[in-house]
Length: 612
Image (tube, rainbow, N blue to C red):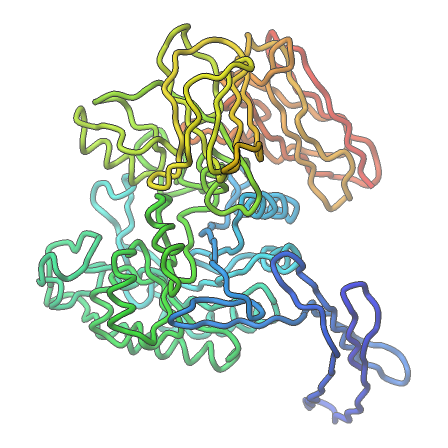
């Protein structure tokens, strides 16, 4: 028997069919259920239906399964981009890895839900599972919350790619990887991925690979000797290498993998993240795909649109600069981009000290970073404003930009470094030396902004800067309340954001906490160091100790500091910007758990968690 339940759990249609199967044999039934005027799944109203399939013998249910499903349509067009349910839109996506800082790879459902909701809050509407399938929880949550998913399978195919063992793009690379299993397992694993995930409404495409076409890593082609006009934006490692694997092989492998996907799902397009687009264009690789993802190759968007008018193009991996987004926003045929990355992740560390890759919109603890607010100013439909500060830069000053690429650019410039664009990594700190020149930056989607210090205007009202996406003022520092007011073209307030000078650390304060959880749940408690007035002390790095009374255990303390290389397995850790997150997991049944946080010289605080 098949029963379809509406989003509010009412039976709307059902049918029953009989099947006789002999012992040790299999049987198959195909059924159709018609739903009239269904509520469509979309990003704002992710309507989910339930399909219950039951096996009934002698009037008794002996087995059953429930599949979450629903109704929606995807449209891809080489000239107009992407439409969900017939409505053209831009995909505002992020790439994510599978870890969660101190929690490692085993990320609880509640942690993923909090992270995905935060990403959606700042305007993200799509996730790319770079570069491997994720745990089932992630897809179910994207179905439930209204997030598109680009489901990706591989980071290499039949040959290994460079593995940077001494730091990101540093030293002598190694070549270990999963390539040795690809010939035997590549098609089987891809088939399993599609069959496992194809019922998820959120998935809008299948990616068969990422940067397997990186020039000379490992494939090569004569076009690599073509010079500047070849269109490459990444290093080609010495031009054409005739002894390297032939890039023409890429097309044959892509066709095989696309065939596997189509065998189990013809309703969604296939794609891949192309790293060497100019080289791959000489092969059958892009043509084997339904939609073509371009990694860091915005300069090819217009050129290739003219050269390949039937190709659907999008940014499958992109840096955070405004120009990369404008290449999407200002070109109707480019349907979206996926930033590298949505959340900071372990691995691909920069120079010591570094825990991992630090270009996320969210940090290791899932909190919004300054660049997350910058992205919100570009992607959110709601009026917003954010204030960040740093010392006014001069020639030779340290770069404020924290993504690895920009840090390397700044290091290469050395003493000649000069800030060209105000930083997207400015924290909300208002504690400096009296009279010191401070750059105050505002990330906003309002048309103009006004800056106040203790209620009095400082600087001048400034219009939104479409060239940088950032409004800024250089002003002398004075203690007080610094506030920005975002305004429409008529000067009416539409958004406001304030930061306050703090005094010395005085107490610990609970900013957020789960007060009641199930025995299978997870409590997340956010602790902030504050002064005697309750103002967050952003400069604090006090050490916090966590103690638990009751049937629960501490899974980890996460402060999100990429440069903190201390022990992450004990119950003591230093705050970062005065904040730390505790993950508490129940170990017993219904009970009360008391969690106490202490720090030398500071007033302690405790949280009570009720386990249902």
